[in-house]
Image (cartoon, rainbow, N blue to C red; front, side, top):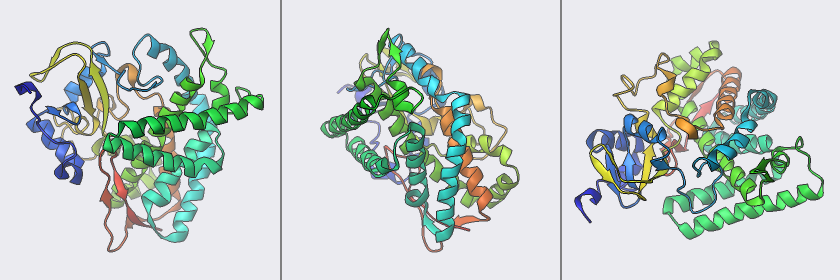
Length: 384
């Protein structure tokens, strides 16, 4: 191993897992372009992450061993599939789905208030993410528990980097989708019936989407939606529980919620990192990266970079929203951002409207999630 490939850090060390944000902040200042056996190259500075995001020719998204539509594609394939995916997150679709989302949140808030003290991640954040995902896709409630189990298995396999398990989990999801597609085809599904029905009528390169392509699209939506939304909800509610003045301000000024949500999630990112692969030899931050080497973009660190965000750990509503990488940037910016923003806004609107105080549960402390997750593993709170 030459000097360029010496291990600069261990992403799975106890110190990193104890407090990911603190560890990534330290890496950003000490070794902003770092090598590890687990991840190969990790980028921690906002400038370097932004450079990669805006140069898709040098830094490819085709990193997965499995079909990943459109996340794991580069142009021109990405452009064709991306156009299809974006059509499911229009303003019109979000406006139509918002009342459904609001009703789901209202039901969950009633359950939380009836208990008084909850473990927010298990009792509210995860159920919210799963129920909203099923409702958006038109999937029956009976599938909720199966999705939770599948999401947990996917997380565990990713953490262990168990490639065989990850392949089996991908095939399991494809089989799950195949079964639903067959049922819907036999029933003569129409585009207006639900998302799967609509996808069966989409075309790319002049032909219908294959079952494998549909399964890949839905798998990407499901992993992103359930894991990231549940983490985001936990982060947001924990932050408000620790900042009572802001909690009360947002109750009286709900129009501030969109900006407040983005700023809280900048401070404590719900998604740790995304992958790229170098298509040619390139130098970043004085480190030489060879073609074919993997690169990890650390969102948590980049969004806390003091070179871009003055006093980065402080909550401020006057920051430039264009600098916030919460949903990425460039051609791969998150297509589901309109749905995520609507869901989190409605979630906090309903929670703040129907409660008077959210605070720590006496004698109990939260526990942080560990890579590849962010946010909280457990979050005991009192809600009244």
